[in-house]
Length: 140
Image (cartoon, rainbow, N blue to C red):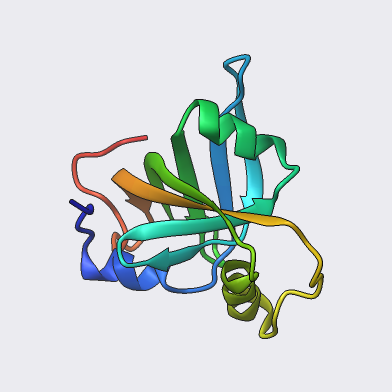
């Protein structure tokens, strides 16, 4: 069952805001990387070159988090969850979707070997001065 988010958070996540994904390296240290993301049907899509270390880290430990920042980065939403699917993006459909979302055009490198990871959120934390995105009872 997908995590049900308040409408205001769902709408915020649908925007092409900057984001940072965190995963756990094999030596136990956390690692964060800026990323494009897409919020789709209760899951988070991220996509990376098949050579990225974080891909292997996600396979070993599927626990990840994603922080999405607004223009005023005090306004943000963080989600934590599990990578539930990793798949080849052979036709570049997922990276094209992300590139159109962030840049308005298909991904430029048509020979890229890309992988998609789907994250199922287990919880979330939000913050902003107005309280619009603030999460009740969850403190990071």
